[in-house]
Length: 191
Image 1 (cartoon, rainbow, N blue to C red):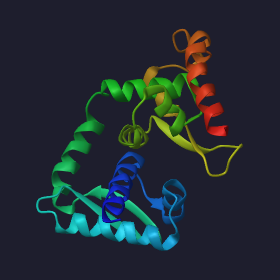
Image 2: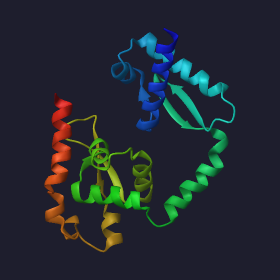
Image 3: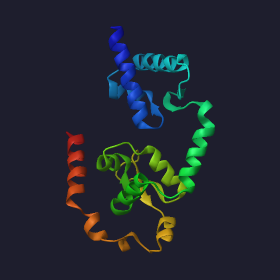
Image 4: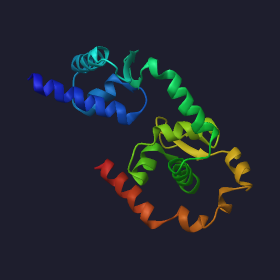
């Protein structure tokens, strides 16, 4: 029984790491098939593990039935320098790729961006938001699903009036390979 609980704690740790922002207790319960009390127990265990680890760079915060994995406050100076450098310097190849996906396929949600890229992109999206190159909008289809689109600042930086002016926009914005990834992913989620 104890091994099973440790396994669930490890899974929660992975989920929080990949999610990249606060997650509700109820969502965790849905994902892991746990009751409300079991969710609280697993979160308490994970939080205690992080508190007892020496020299741990991560921290678990809990507030209003929301939990999030964050960097340890002792790392704040280095994280701040890294983030500042990311925002001031040229775009990384990863940021350029995510920005291209949003420009050619937007508005698009984080889940679809990650389906195309195959990896978590929370940090990159935050940096692009901070740079003012993309913005969040609420989808008409779902009030709970945020989507991303390019901003007027993005157009200004490129010196164009519309994303339609991007190279090969018509072809790439309707690329069948990307459609296969997205629509296959959506069909799998609906099943």
